[in-house]
Image 1 (cartoon, rainbow, N blue to C red):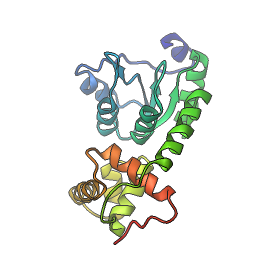
Image 2: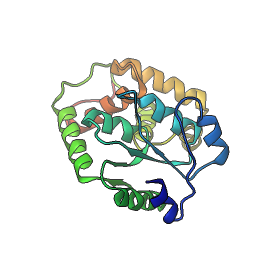
Image 3: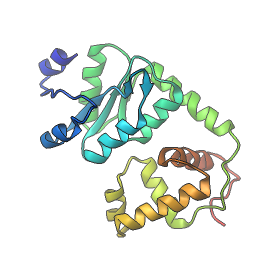
Image 4: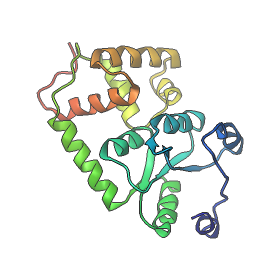
Length: 197
């Protein structure tokens, strides 16, 4: 895989999840290719760490097999390509992502559709309803925006953004940001659910 990327003109830096992220940050890469499965377990925290440390880098997730929920978490962590196909497909996906696009293998796309169908079938999350500002913030989070980008777009501080996220997580009964985004998106998919009080 490394040689194929280098042949395509990519400079490839080694990366190990055990503290090497600081080293990668120094290079400010345009894209990060990551396998979020470490020790046999999916790590959404690793993806969140990468996107927090490198907000301008595009994230490409590579794995032999991810479950639908894991694919959703990767996309919510701003992955713009998720692949489990050949090396040639990976090189093409990286090129597309660097041009601003997204690329998902057919198998992964099928898992994403299944995951969305399951989210729609799930009972609506509990909550008093989100404020207009909380909805704005979660719409931007669902688009893969970082806290700093949201703060700039809405002309508020990052701390205010984080406060709204915490309030919305509580209203949605969520333990994590990703869980709250998934619940928010499932509410949007339900035509008769009110998001405001």
